[in-house]
Image 1 (cartoon, rainbow, N blue to C red):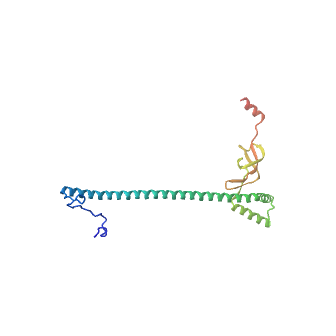
Image 2 (tube, rainbow, N blue to C red):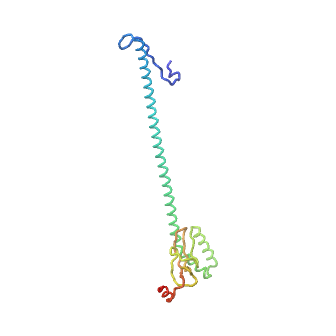
Length: 212
């Protein structure tokens, strides 16, 4: 029975013990028979080594293909993640621009509401409507800024009036003529203010400074 059928993984060992050489027809000596047997065994060992080498090359090739496919998959995942981030960023930007456009159109209305409140004219049903409008604008991220007494900042303030005052030590907003509005860090409109600087030096002070 074949050893493969018996479940053995080993190749059968063929022993050439023939006393007559099949090629020459002459009788073999003991040494010749042993040499023939050794050559047969060496041939089988060489075939086994070739099979093992082929299997090793196939495994190495398979491992290289797996590594290449894994790298491709990782690259695709990274590209998709970057795409999602870019889409989310663009979507947020478009939304912010749309909201900013709508709220910019409402700023004159909010200015009218503010003036009416300052003059005590914000009463009755108009007061409730104005409060609802301001609440909705606040939910959309709109916030007013600009307060009397804060330092003048040209990045968020627009100076419409200028004066000198002994009561300040730096350029200061002494009057808020029109509040500014922003959405998050984005300024929709700067606060329009009256600015006062420290008291203007007199001519004598200027002359003394020049002499020194």
